[in-house]
Length: 65
Image (cartoon, rainbow, N blue to C red; front, side):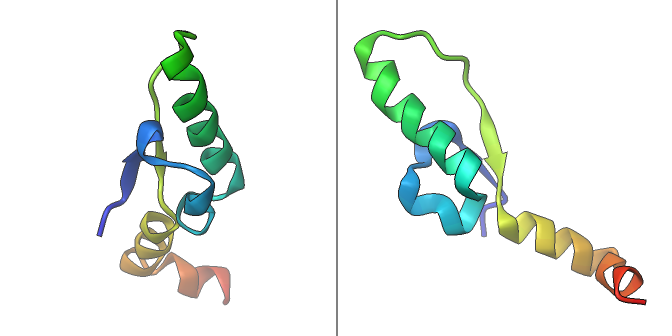
């Protein structure tokens, strides 16, 4: 399972994996970069990374206590 995705790997179909804002950034980069518009690289952490972090560190239990 991937926890980090490069913005160039993300588009609007990735909303469930990385959220709406990150999916929109990925979509912009995918459309603007081929036009020669300079955009700095970046990455998004996935929702799976967030939930696994909470589970492995028993944070979810503390939040619901």
